[in-house]
Length: 279
Image (cartoon, rainbow, N blue to C red; front, side):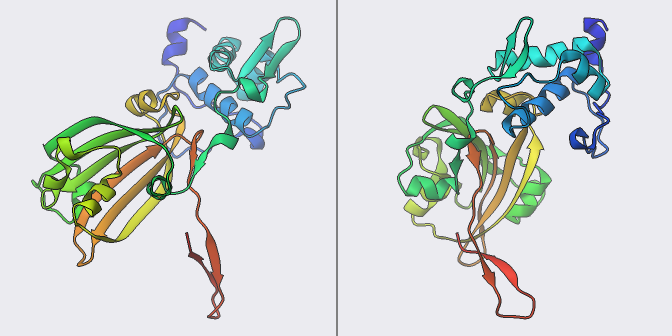
């Protein structure tokens, strides 16, 4: 397969084994197949699918398993080798790199609500990437903030790191009713909700959703990960004590460095027991 064909090949990688099958959402994949394959193998390495003391499947075996060319497999493995996730030994095989050679160790993940961790003293750095005083947000943000078509907001994009590792990039939309409190010269390392609190605005409740999405070019560059790698997306709308929306945040987090952790308790007070969040 030529380099040109490889670059533009966009069919799904469909391995025959149920253990490795991809579940398609119906969307058309436009990424090169080697990129899809490297994403699959990267996740399997993280999950400990391949023992470190034995070679991974050979190029020929991977090509057969995933119904792709050996050129595709070779490029996928080259990507993982550059990342330091695998070691290729001539005449012996390809091995998962020892834990100390993997830059992204799952045991080093930050866990919990970032704002709470900062309040408890976690040392983070925050860089303001973008500040737009009058931004026309997408319709879903207008809806979340209870605004009308044509309304504008202040938009902030911030990158937060911890011990040199990128936790995530957050886009915060603040309605004009409180946007004077987040002027560019007032924005520092504090979470935006804390900036509002320190200015006298009291958040009362929040609604949020959590899901996984593939990283696009911009997000991948910001987080230092590969394009289409899964990231944690957290959408949160914060409301004041009389129900007014104070801000809407879309946070995208690197799952290598961050995980969302909650505590639950079992409510057995009715005949239909349910889990309740306690932290």
